[in-house]
Image 1: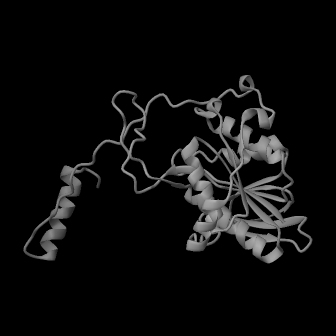
Image 2 (image 1 turned 90 degrees about the vertical axis):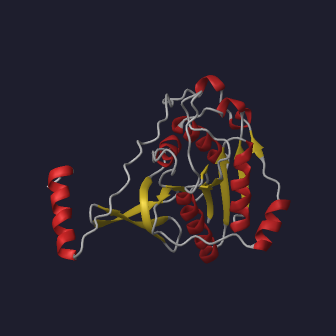
Image 3 (image 1 turned 180 degrees about the horizontal axis):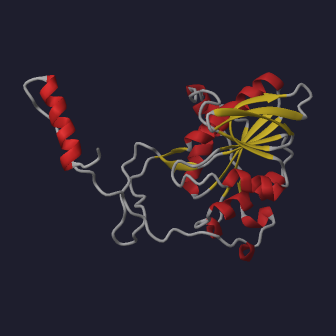
Length: 261
């Protein structure tokens, strides 16, 4: 099977996020960039399918020049090839435009399966995967936690968790599926893989290569302002001679001070 995996670069969840007072937007200086964790589940699943059924895994990403490092990581982890979409017109691309450009790139290849992360850990929108399916007129299932490919590779059965239950859905291939936590346990890049990835060329696609006109790429959303959540008050430690007295004081504080009971 030939599988495409859409990979996005996001700030590490361990990065301290600040807001610039000049722009009221997230300050990207000093941010550590990594592959979106949900995309790692998608990549791992693609690699496991290739190991069982053969074929190729191609990682595809869109973004500024720094986003190439995520594709290098995907290659080091085991992807066979990578494609990078980069164009100044896409610098302020929203999810809609991103999906539009990724779909145009995916049309250039012949893929039996397209995998994405269910959402980005930065904007948490969950939009790109379904939008790609819409642009390509392909079936789509979101938030999958199990994937079973039929012997003829023409269909699949997927599991997804919904409201304390599990849905089992049959879907014809090719299709777009978005990966949720629990689908697998992603592997780490090997040292040999990192050395080989450093030597691989990553083709760069511009809008002209994708047959897209800048005027046709109209973002549907924009970020007006970013705000950090208000600081929480420091917690209070209740000290008392005995556990019983501590419990009484806790109940009193919850009732009279916090007024939550």
